[in-house]
Image: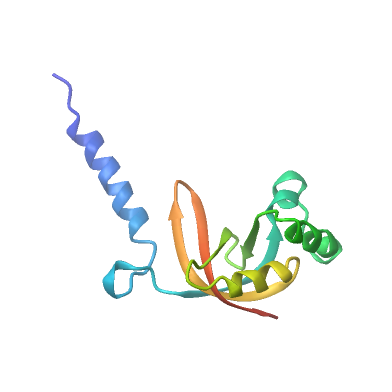
Length: 125
């Protein structure tokens, strides 16, 4: 007879560990965090490492054309940036700051190895 219980325990433990990474506020929603870093146009960053001051003009053009944007956080993680469904104005401002160093306040999420951040506020550093 095979023992499936140990496998289940490992999967359940891994899932609980991932869920504990995000600090939860009242009602189960993720609490806002503030992260600093560079806003990337993800198309150029993933394809050929495009980033930094020499890439800023291209990053702005790509963001204006609708390429996805992300944040290369000071923690070394990449966060895909999302607009808030109720008010997308902060995300729109973040798009106009592609290639810049910023501080973003937003709601973090993580699934399947992808880090995301719903943008609630952004300021250029």
